[in-house]
Image (tube, rainbow, N blue to C red):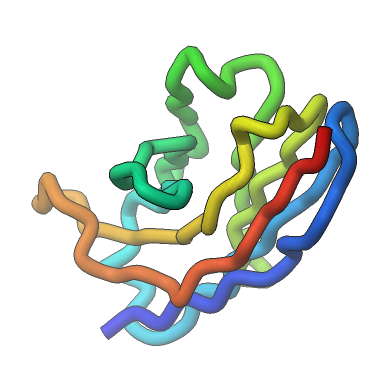
Length: 119
């Protein structure tokens, strides 16, 4: 089992920045890939960023590329999502997720943290 705990959400004005954190504990060998997803009210879950825990390579969708940065601190077992130049459409609950190398789906999820961007 892997336990994920997000923090760092809040209310920010458009153009501002926030950094989300995801603390990872438990069976870390099952967390080869770490990702952030988000879900806005009335919408489906959207992929935001992914990082490979060991080598550190990252993937982003066009909607956040150049504004969001995912990173990890192996010593602290923590994954971060730095969000800059936030827009009202970034408002959502943000979830941290993990999966093993052999899986295609993310099978470990955090409880989510609310990010609200005011215009």
